[in-house]
Length: 210
Image (cartoon, rainbow, N blue to C red):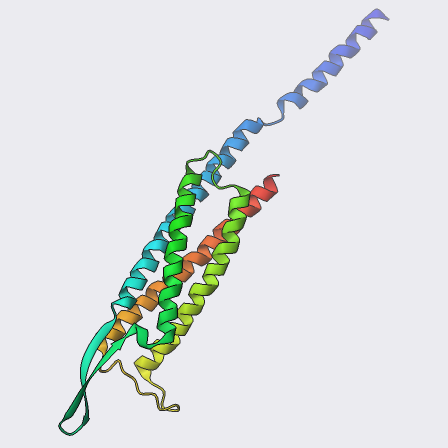
């Protein structure tokens, strides 16, 4: 009887040992998550620096798009006409929108750099604010790009139905400037879209971890 009573505790101990050693150490997984969020914060910072560069260059190229030509209106009569971005409200809105994008990317870029220095990267609250503000700015920049592209297409091809003549056959330098500026604005819009996707992805990972 005594041998049976003492064997039972040993059997219970032998069954508990595998259960204790089979659980993975939680600290290792926490470190992997922290490194992953750190990489996402670095990518976010680099994208915002790239957004700032494209927005600034786009504004500079558009603002410097000015060209003066001598236009013959009658035999022996020539007038001087200057084409510049301020002649079109769409281009004025374009410059304003891209200027806001440049300022916004500068501010959020500094915030991202500060977040990279933290151990856990961007917080969930910060990412939520980024999603809202990036989406708002994406709509503004995309609208400016579309409006300017429509005006630029008329200047490039004209519109025979509305009797709007094309001007790029005369103002070639001016048209080259606004085409390059609109292309850079399109790249800025795509960058903002990638930033929104990245913020949503990181935010979903942070929520799922809780």
